[in-house]
Image 1 (tube, one colour):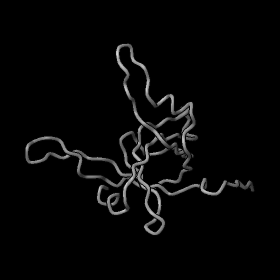
Image 2: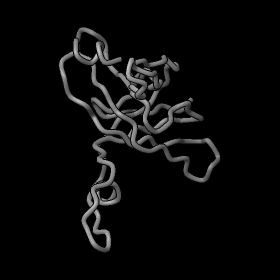
Image 3: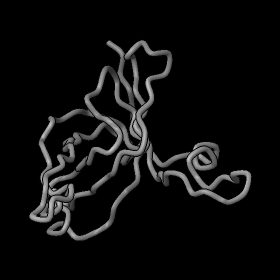
Image 4: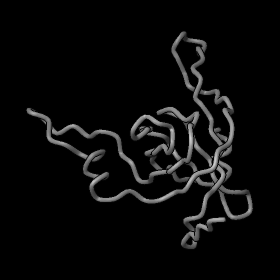
Length: 134
C-alpha cells in the first residue's frame, strides 16, 4: 500500500458544486438567481503560480489593455469532474467557516480524465452571505 503525505492545509477537501440557472424576472430580463446543486467531489486546493497568474491576468491587446479572468486558486481533481466554468464551489463546514470559489476555467491535461485542473477565484464574504447567495 502506498501512503501519500500532505502538508498541513493541503490535504484533499470536499467541495460542493452549484450551477447557476437563468430565470426571467418580471421585466423579461435574464437574472441568475437560482442555483442547482450538482454534487460533491474531492480535490486539493492550492494558490496559483506566477506563470498561471500571468496566463489569466492582465494582458496587452493591440489597442487597449484587456483584463481577462482573475484567478487566485487551482483545484486538482483526480478523475473526471462535473465542474464547468461559471459554477460556484463551496468548501468547509459551518464551524470553521465556508469558502466560496467561482470557477473560471477547467483543464483536462492530455484529455485522459486522469486529473483535472480547476482555476477559480475566491469570493469573500461572511458565511451568511455565502449561503444566501447559493
